[in-house]
Figure 1 (cartoon, rainbow, N blue to C red):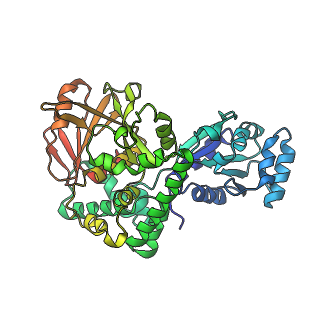
Figure 2 (cartoon, rainbow, N blue to C red):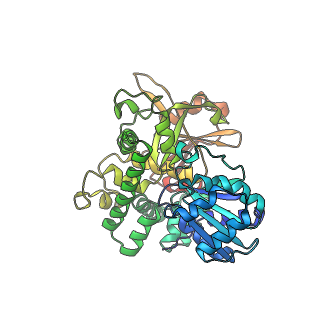
Figure 3 (cartoon, rainbow, N blue to C red):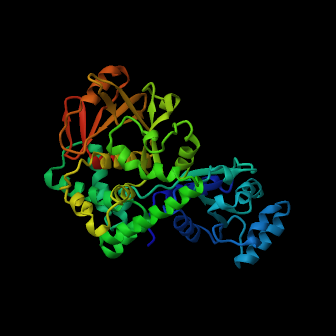
Length: 442
């Protein structure tokens, strides 16, 4: 199925404003929908297009990029190979999976300067050393990231255009919506948590209305990611680090404990492996900030981090992957909100996904409390010249000790303070208690 994606409008703005002055690079994890989105855009916004899919092109196409001195010859050969006529300033050439042909990415500099056509690249693992070795990265690229479908896009996919508008209005008004509305919206959110935002999984849900088919689709994607991780790191360390994300979050530690997953390996020694995993866009990293302040990127500690999956639907399947679907009651239990296990780590991953998809970098902060305990603020955002600290609670209980102590410690830096939880909107003194679904608009 073809799904409506917000990035389409961003791409259209690029086309109208840049007018060929830059190429557009669409980054994102495998199976997130990059190729489908770009093909739809090319079909509807150009007179003609050529898609060069480097995951399956042969030597004839690859050899064209070895010498870019004669662009007239390059374009004639390209049109001949693909049987497509290109029209000056009315056609686009797409380099799909461009990481597989680094010379094509390098050629963007010359192609953009030539100015005849528009260029769109798609890719994953774009920063891996072998994919950029011996090439000049073009400065003529404008990069955008395609994430898994956010909550609003998920609503669109299942044919609900009304609820996202109501959610946005409710978020802006900051007022209780009543038990009936809140219960319905929370059930929708739990459905989104289970299905996730990967187009393949969403398609399986819409086509079959069967969570077994959804789970099968997500397991297929996870197997694909596992194979990619072995290509990144044949020792299997990346694969093990990825597989341990749910258990690491469930342990409620103040950071990802790399030594408990890979024996005799410090975080420093695995820095390149983790960086390559982050480049794959399959994970979302939340970094510890040494000094919580506006401009937190300057105080990021790269050695202390939490790791989340980029898609919470995949997270749920990974967390319970040890059981077959028929043995796994996670779907019915979570959908009906009757799961006995502490689901805080699933909601924390969900919030991480929603905040990141909204364009936020992820930071958190911990500091000592009494009796060998730590206070922890799950996420910290910058809101204008103030901090927006966020605590995530999987239950309706609205205690927020860590948030209170943190805000007292840094009172001059704090704007609003937010508790995200599973109940309806309310104010608890100076703390704003928001239902979890509002994280999609923060």
